[in-house]
Length: 446
Image 1 (cartoon, rainbow, N blue to C red):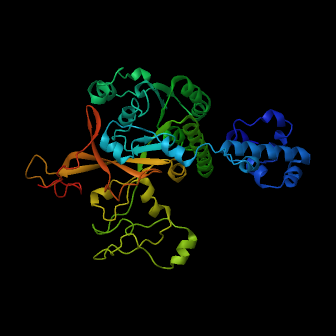
Image 2: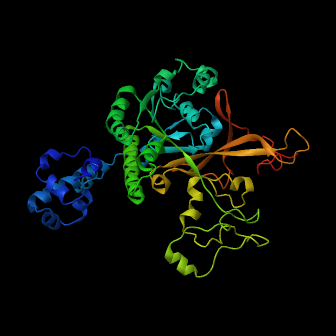
Image 3: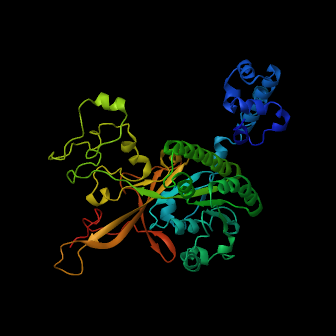
């Protein structure tokens, strides 16, 4: 029973110590105990039928109690054993503020408690400053006395902006008692084994002792890259399968911690460059100008049809309708990664497409993804005779990719909140800010 401890951590396994080794030897999982007939399980593991029935019933009862499902006797009496009703869930909804009203409004109140929130973006984006800025101020009673846990891979992160944030932000300077970085609990996880041990055993103890309401994991992809992407390694397919299994276990563990302890978990994730063929016309869609990865069945059904040639004069009226395989990952990942969903992208946008690390498996483990998008703005150089445009500045947006409690932002940066990095932290740019013509496409007017 290799998975019984993870499915039901509180199950009394000592009462069935004689049965579990044989069940594990014959690869009988918890799912098999719940779905297969007891006679079949007994024959498969060569165990007494009555003992197997007793174990199956105990596992079923423990699972029902863990999920809060009422039994037949309680239903007959009209009582309910549900952990929370719908009204209780709505009334207990709580978030952690980002210290900016516009950013909180876009996030539906802030970082939700009880869920896994991912903040992804380039390292030049303020992922580490963003995390400490939400650390000191959970929107709950006596928030500044609640301590966050910062889990990182190599060493305690040195962020020179954090002391400046405490000295200059009006919310923090007016707080009594004054917040301090000493309240941040820093934990180093140099490898996956130590990370799993710390999350499974040490973090629950720290939560109960120090009233922790926030856990920051930075970065979730670092240890997995070190473990499964070693140079010169063999068995790449087996490594990917093992990594997917480990990611599922990590997601299940983090969700359990967030739900049982009623805390928010913020995971900082890295991004990788996404390459696409943009040799077509400027106004065409990137989907029409690259070959997607499709299955052999999809290629046979498509026949001899290929993607439209770049020599076409004008794009079709529906930019995404001409893809040869609309069910491919290349096509659909634009709507859950945060990059590439603009139907009419500019050439600059096509050169800056990103993909969050750890792929689709990790995406299914999180509830809330925030993408920090950074776009360059080019303009004329100092020398008037130079025709080549030079980098003038950067513009940054916070985009809600998907969430359980708030609508996602629109395509591209529509609906996203533009922000900038200041001495007092991150702050949203005013909505009445004048935008020059062409600046949205990354080019300043001359």
